[in-house]
Image 1: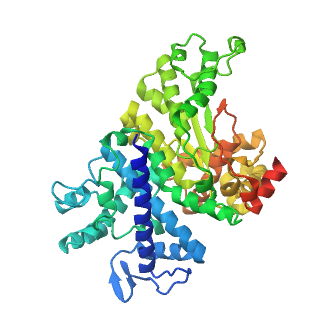
Image 2: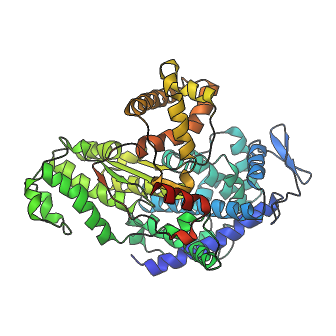
Image 3: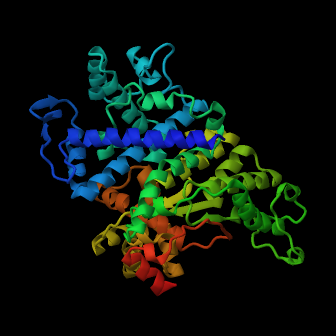
Length: 506
């Protein structure tokens, strides 16, 4: 993999996106200091801005969410960074999917033009828009030769309507949709960069590409954070990912995975032929007398508590796949079992978690591409943003039988509010009875959500609560193997809350 070219690509893309997002923020009326000089007023079927009427009724809610997010100069910079890397990740995911022939060409230029295929096809009447108001808007844009606007509409709806992109990267019915740059098609802009030869065709076949892209993308921010450290500035929770993430070399990953997951499997299957392929396995005389800790391959669980973009879990997938094949499983069932039963991850960085899920699904698709069409998401979770639940909301989730666990759950959720800052170093203890009951209610809620059996209030509570329960059930679980390249940060660079917590607990 040509990492120097990939690094240049990611750094160039970041600068283009930051500039484009910044301009969009100004278009919507937000100033560098966080003040707002305009307002978006809803109208029937649309909104008004600067005295003009537009026919997109989804905008006012997104604009109001954006206004709530922006409070001061620092929050402006945070929003610009967030929206820029959100769109970088989504666009690169689309490019990787199309270059691996998992989806039709979308971002590639049509022959002899600088028009992306997604726009060229729309001109021929071929698109995936479902809502009539969006179809009408697209027709207007194409009729008036507004290719840039048509591209933006088609990209946002693609990310909403495509099952894999939607499941992994979430719905974009929030303010990030408003901040998709309007200069993607300009000469030497982002589409030109994406369609250049910076990234070799063979590199798009590598699952690790998405991780390398992300690390290189945030490298400039990492440099800035370290420059701030020299000025005695402490790392905010928002800065910790950039300051501590590192893409672990493949041989180190293999060494760690083979000497944990690999050894545990050899205890279970001492005569396994897989042993000869484990290049980094370290043996000692005690290995021959070790009793197996699993009775079935589905019990061989691996957790990466600081998973980043998922490099360790991807390597674990390959090794587990060999084990499943040796156990006689067909590829399709093995792939599903590994995602459902064997691999788990946690991280404080929302975008890294999305990329880890994406990378793991790409790895799974190497063995069975049908997995991309199923609603199976890897168990990789991000510590949720701070949220407060009142007792009545917890009662709604727990039901009458679980009221006795209300105080215990509330205390655990309070601790998880520190998660974005402390991460997997959090010590969260709940009783086995409470955990088992929460797990049961979690399964029940998921089933009811699938069958649309939750009322509006239950849906609202569940959507807020689920990210917490995902992490709670993971961080209080027991795993046969834990493998991580943990984040490294000296105490002198920690913010006061993080420093106080680790000193008290460790």
